[in-house]
Image 1 (cartoon, rainbow, N blue to C red):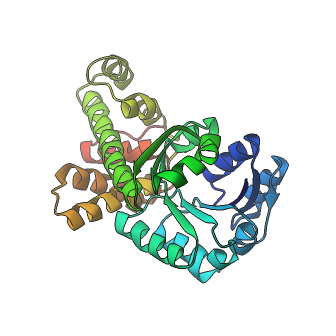
Image 2: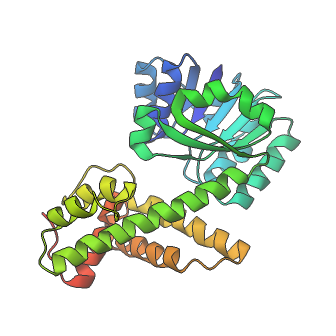
Length: 294
């Protein structure tokens, strides 16, 4: 399968590498030259534009930041018209369900197919090829694209027949992820404020009924001054913003998501938006008068 890949960032590049390893021909584009060079070194083909990535491809994958970037690539830059008729656009970025629905309508009206397939698992999952994929598309199309999804995903879920349904599931997932990170930071800050060694608190809670995947993954990084970035604070500023917008659209009250969102916004607002998302704990340090790490 020939795969056009747009967005060779922290997750996109390892996803593209895994597709190459699975036997697919990948032609990839990113605004920065370095990821293209890395793709070429892995056996892919770096191209100079999104249009070149789409030309001659069976599938055009968009691992961009949001719906606005995806729309720019497809409709303004001209990638959709460059994709052969009958080709498939796979949107793996996170956006509002209604944005995915609107994009799908324009893509299908142009004689191409559309798969709403957000992913979860972060940089670690992208590197390991173990991402969870939540696909909203016709069943026959999902079955046809399984070899593609298996190239970069470990858990494949067909969540519905229509575009937007994948984003609905991803929205629920991101609500839980963001709230879990924020409350883990709150718990470890409380332990420190009360004079308990947060490392001890993490060891105990991480092996008890209070444990969560996020606590055990982000908790150790919360205790570091400047950990490696696997998912940035600004990702959850965006994703929890999507959660809240989806709540407004469906008239669902989301008070915990709103509180978590504000903590990420505050962390970003102080200039830490590109820090690892575990560093939302810095906001608690300021709120509680605790010394900054490092």
